[in-house]
Each structure stands twice: as C-alpha cells, then as structure tokens.
Image (cartoon, rainbow, N blue to C red; front, side):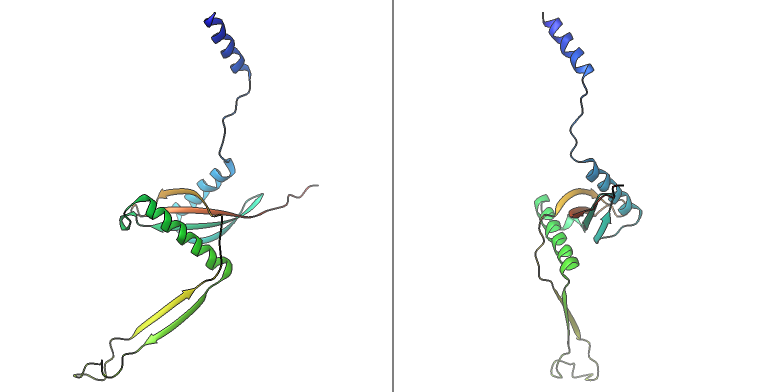
Length: 164
C-alpha cells in the first residue's frame, strides 16, 4: 500500500507545474548588474538607476572590516552612512569653511614670519529624513580585497508603461 501511495505522489508531482519561490528576480538582476558595474569600475555614493518599469536610488558604501569590532557594528555604520549619502543627495547640504590662523604669541619666536599652524575646518550639515533604504547585497570588492561593499536600494517611482 505504501508503494502505491509513493508512486501516486511521484506521478502527481511529475505532472503538476511546480515553481520554486523567488525573492524577486528583478532585484536579483539589478544587484548582479550593480556588482558587475562596480567590479569593472569602482565607485561609491548615490546614483539613480532606471530599468523598464522602475526608477531606483542606489547608495553604495565601502568600509574596511578591520576598523570594526563586530559584524553588527559594520552593518550599522554602513546603514547610517548610506542614509547620510541619500539625504545629502535628495535634500542638499550646507557647507561652511573657516581658516584658523594662530596668533603672534603662538608663532615661533625664532622665526616670527613663518606660520605653520594654519588649520582649515570644513563642516557639512544636511537636514532631512530618509527612510526605507533596503540592503540588497554585500560583497568583498575584487579590486581592493580588504573593502566590504554594501548596496542599498530605494524605489523612487514606478514608471508608466506605454500601452498602444
């Protein structure tokens, strides 16, 4: 009896159309494309990608894993850096620069005409909020094997299809 049940089950399964579940084939294809593009010419920052149906905002972050204690720490830093990059891209930023020149008291008394301690301070401020950045892939960069690359994705809009 068991043989007949197994045989019947195999027969039914062989004639039925079974499809495995897929996460999202479009995102997988986009991830593979971005990875190939990065490996051919490394870049980091924010870019806008268009495919046939969607408009995406891609944020790519490179970090050195040796600078972090744990995997959770490097993932959190990558997420914050990605949001910062996207915020600056979408909302702009305010940049201030100041030059600090030492007073005559701090200049060397042997050579008062030389000023070696000039410092320039540049500050960048951006205001805004970015939500729903999705981590779609991480990989170790091929050109520079000690860097970990994080790819974050945000769907900007669905493009309308032209129907004729």
